[in-house]
Length: 252
Image 1 (spheres, rainbow, N blue to C red):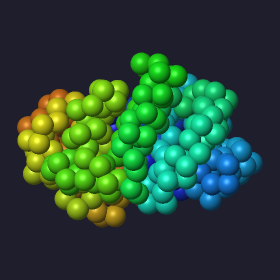
Image 2: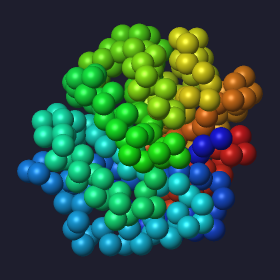
Image 3: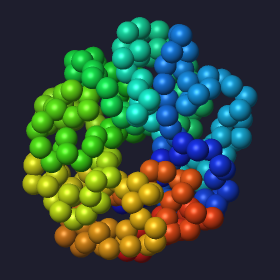
C-alpha cells in the first residue's frame, strides 16, 4: 500500500528521516513558461532548491520513491503542449540530471487535447521504462462518473486507451468527501482497487479522525492502492510533526 505526501511548501523533510511509514513523495508543482521549467515560482535550476535536491536524494537512498508533479491549480499543460518538443526535452534533461526522481504525476486542471496527453504518457513510458512511475491526479467526481473532468476529457476514455494501460495508478482528490462512499463510487464505475489512491487535504481534518474512513476503505477494499495527503506542511493531526499522518494511516 502506498502512503504518499505531496510536498509543495519546502519546510524540510527532516521528520521523515528514519521513518518507514511513508512510501512516496510527490514534489510539487512543475510549470512551464518562457522556454523554461519552473518549480512553483522559481526556475528549476535556481539555487533556492539546493536543500530540496539534497534531501530528496538522501531519502531516495533509503527507499522513499520520488516523483515530480506537473500541473495543478497553476496550470502547466497549455504552455507545455504549445512547444512540446522543447519542453519535453527540458523535462528529460532534469530527470537525467536528478535520477532519483523516478516518476511523473500528471495533475490536469486546464483543458487539454486528449491525444496530446496520451502521446506524452506513451513517450514517458517508452523513454523511461516500465519501472518509471506514471500517475494522474483527477478529482474524485471525474472518476466516479464518465463526465469530463477539469481537463475537459473523460478519464474513462483515457483509462480504456492504450495510454491508459501505462498509468500506474490514479491519485483521486477526495477533498469534498474523504469517505468510504466516495471510494466505493469510483470502484463501482469500473476502476480496479489497485489503481485508486484515495486523497485528502490537510485542512479537512483537525485531528486524527481521518483514520476512520481509511479503516473503512481498507476493510472493505483490501486491495486499495493507498492514501495521500495534500500537503506535507500541515498534515494532521500534529503540524509540528507531519510524519505522524503516515504512521496513523499505516496503523488504521
